[in-house]
Length: 61
Image (cartoon, rainbow, N blue to C red; front, side, top):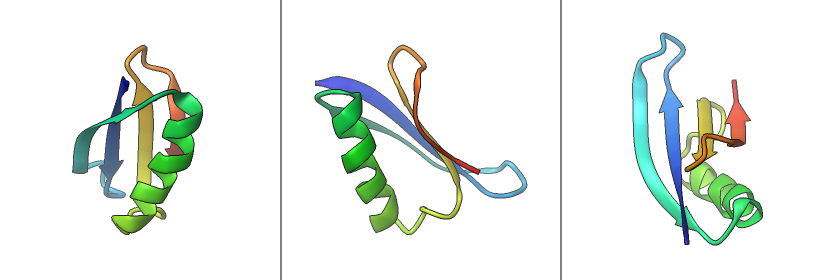
């Protein structure tokens, strides 16, 4: 399992959520991460999901 960091922000830039998630690979992270973001009700907020190397997997403004 690989480690991924999820962060979501208010329009002002204030941090709403910062969590560490684990997935097998970037494809799974993108698919399951998007579902988790939707469950949290944060799909329309500014958010990002990055892998441990800093590569953006998901990003929304």
